Length: 480
Ligand SMILES: *[C@@H]1O[C@H](CO)[C@@H](O)[C@H](O)[C@H]1NC(C)=O
Ligand SMILES: *[C@@H]1O[C@H](CO)[C@@H](O)[C@H](O)[C@H]1NC(C)=O
Ligand SMILES: *[C@@H]1O[C@H](CO)[C@@H](O)[C@H](O)[C@H]1NC(C)=O
Ligand SMILES: *[C@@H]1O[C@H](CO)[C@@H](O)[C@H](O)[C@H]1NC(C)=O
Ligand SMILES: *[C@@H]1O[C@H](CO)[C@@H](O)[C@H](O)[C@H]1NC(C)=O
Ligand SMILES: *[C@@H]1O[C@H](CO)[C@@H](O)[C@H](O)[C@H]1NC(C)=O
Ligand SMILES: *[C@@H]1O[C@H](CO)[C@@H](O)[C@H](O)[C@H]1NC(C)=O
Ligand SMILES: *[C@@H]1O[C@H](CO)[C@@H](O)[C@H](O)[C@H]1NC(C)=O
Ligand SMILES: *[C@@H]1O[C@H](CO)[C@@H](O)[C@H](O)[C@H]1NC(C)=O
Ligand SMILES: *[C@@H]1O[C@H](CO)[C@@H](O)[C@H](O)[C@H]1NC(C)=O
Ligand SMILES: *[C@@H]1O[C@H](CO)[C@@H](O)[C@H](O)[C@H]1NC(C)=O
Ligand SMILES: *[C@@H]1O[C@H](CO)[C@@H](O)[C@H](O)[C@H]1NC(C)=O
Image 1 (tube, rainbow, N blue to C red):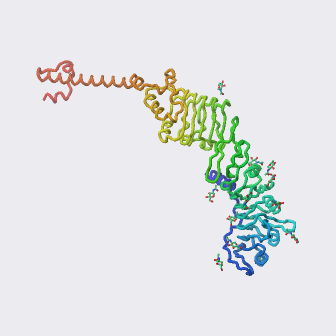
Image 2: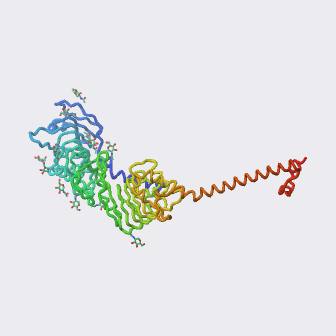
Image 3: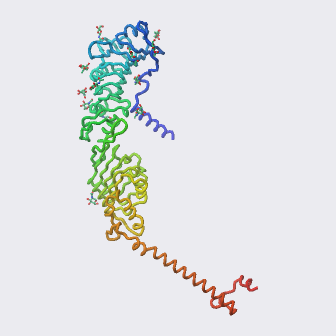
């Protein structure tokens, strides 16, 4: 029990570690802005070792901020402190003077301003200890400049670059320990990001909500170059597809499924004609199409609800023609059965269509198509009474409904079965004979008893065999 709990906790810790940075890296900005008027000696608000300064032009920093007593501060937040007008388009955020003067700062943010580039000159013997740099909500465009800053501040553990105008993430080479937040960069391109993720060179914060534009083929197994949006989650899994592809099979790009903010690239797995005797135990994540036709597969067990992590739950299309499948009972209760587009099981050894399959079509006459001809169906009265009408009712979903034959009746088609012929010759007729015989017997018995009674009343003795029967105790009672 305890061990299980520890394992579970370890798992949870590992999982959260993957997508959220340790919270102690950045101090939280929970201070209000002071309403600054020019000429005030110190226009910042303080709380403990944090300070927040708002609405400056940054060339006024020396007038205001530097006059504040910031010596022991660990966190300094600049909000809406825009750059001075230099008469050019360059709005450079130079961190050099402030980091030189306050090397003890651990968290610093310059947000909601208009910088388009950033600089830090490490030559001026400053040794910053900065862990967290938040430059979100600016107009940063130059990833090379950011890369230089990151490389010049080795203590840096997190850089928030959200809501800027970057086309590339700064591709630093030794950033295994660095968290980067890249959400809301409208023109961010996926190719550079995919490389960085492949090399594990940077950890991305909030990957599910960070999207990039896919303009080229970024993953080994997909060839096309459609332009659409991917989330970093998606790139991460896509990078893993080649590792997860079942041996002997080929994995290709499947469908593009738009979700809320991005698109999911799904996977198509092709294992046809590979001498398989069973289905792949596990598929790559997001597999929607599986082709296992022309093999010697005998059952569909990996698809069953018992195999939770086999990734069969997103499957929409299954081609399993020309195998040796005897039973499809494993499909009962699966997600696949609720949402499939196509099941093709032609030329197998299936002996009957299970009730739950029929029910799946009755419940929701959705878009699913099924093909099941060329199997070993054994037909009887119930095939004619139930399966035949089911085939005809759902013929728009059963591509080969009029090709399904009975292996025990010389390949007679199920749709040609005649209920009267099949069923009358069998149990129904037989039951009628028994009932008729029973009724006849009853009538004879009643007749004989009535006759005996009539004779006894009129003649005074009982006819054979009643007269030969031994006397019962109740007879004495009636005679008295
Ligand atoms: C700041 O002061 C100006 C004028 O004194 C006032 O109009 C404004 O509402 C104040 N802003 C805040 C956030 O207090
Ligand atoms: C930002 O600061 C400028 C003054 O530098 C002020 O006019 C503007 O209203 C401020 N913007 C916000 C969102 O507070
Ligand atoms: C900074 O910390 C030192 C040592 O703790 C202390 O002597 C000094 O007064 C502090 N300065 C400020 C401005 O709080
Ligand atoms: C480095 O320091 C020198 C003098 O101390 C100064 O002139 C120069 O502007 C500084 N460089 C930066 C990038 O701040
Ligand atoms: C960076 O600043 C923005 C705006 O103040 C804030 O919402 C965000 O949480 C900060 N990022 C981090 C990592 O603290
Ligand atoms: C980006 O920054 C780098 C380094 O600061 C600089 O050499 C380069 O010219 C900048 N690129 C643009 C387009 O501004
Ligand atoms: C953002 O970058 C794109 C190209 O990368 C450019 O076309 C656009 O004008 C930039 N937006 C702003 C607000 O600078
Ligand atoms: C880093 O990105 C730049 C584009 O900003 C590119 O020219 C360079 O080749 C990249 N470096 C690596 C190692 O991928
Ligand atoms: C990723 O690693 C490959 C080879 O190890 C290297 O060629 C490439 O430049 C690296 N890309 C980045 C973005 O670091
Ligand atoms: C990245 O990490 C994964 C999992 O930890 C590992 O399998 C892979 O080899 C790593 N890639 C590189 C280029 O180091
Ligand atoms: C994305 O952000 C929204 C709100 O900002 C949040 O509700 C959602 O959980 C986030 N999704 C992921 C995958 O982080
Ligand atoms: C199926 O198995 C038989 C013998 O067991 C073999 O001859 C045949 O080639 C196999 N078919 C496939 C498609 O693997």
